[in-house]
Amino acid sequence: MRNGYAVADSRFVVNYYRMTVDHRLLFGGGENYSYRFPENIAQVVRPRVLKVFPQLSGVRFDYAWGGTLAITPNRMPYIPRNRSGVLQRERVFRAWSPARALCRQDSQRRNRRRATRI
Image 1 (cartoon, helix red, strand yellow):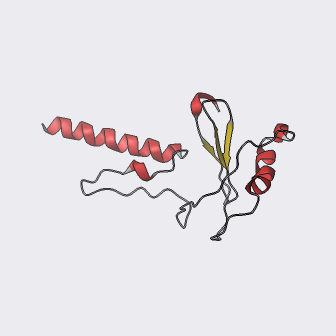
Image 2: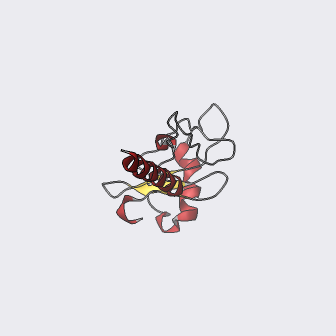
């Protein structure tokens, strides 16, 4: 995970992770469809972490927390166009690089067209 890249796998219940600036592993996953959070979030996430990083079996978690997560029905990013037809990338999950690249290409293409009309 060089250069601060975030990673997300393709599982239905997605795991996502990245290294923080102070070289800690920030790992998310194990969402559920309840309005309640597990009593021990670290206990829920630990098996997922160890499946991806088994070498961390003896490492303690410094922090564990839960939160509400919005997910589209098909698990794909929702990338709408605004009234000008520009893709709105601020709604794209940060780790989903293909969608970010698509938005960037769309923006560059529109800027080139606009520049040639001026």
